[in-house]
Length: 213
Image (cartoon, rainbow, N blue to C red):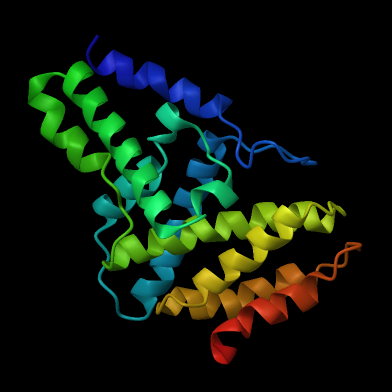
């Protein structure tokens, strides 16, 4: 079917709902998540550039816009399952990468296969673009979980998502992380909308986690 198969498959990302199986005031699709990650990433990259970093923008847009394409084949697996162990997470990633590889080999014309294998690769690595993707991905987890907590959703999973995403972000050595923690997160936490969940306390505990390990 050629590249048409790829274009048509993108519709599936609109139907895959993140954090399945939990009550949510707002549902978010993988497609919406991917779009937001791109928006976060380009601002984070701007912050890095202002601090002297060199950004490969083509790579950044490729890896951020396509980072969850593999979920077309396996869906959004519940976070507790996905991260139950490093071994399980590695196996899930291998299955996802294998299915993406097979899709490209079976559907994409020969002259574009190398391009698609490059663009749909796992983008999270130790390069500055890969680290920005990691931060942007976790930032959307923070915002999605925060919105549920702010509305009074008492599902423990959202407290865990919010806390663990902040802990992960706090371990990534980028200027944009410092900016997020010092200039953006306080505005979020100090939002005047009331919540039955003590978001400020959870935030402070998450950010102090690295210091007490």
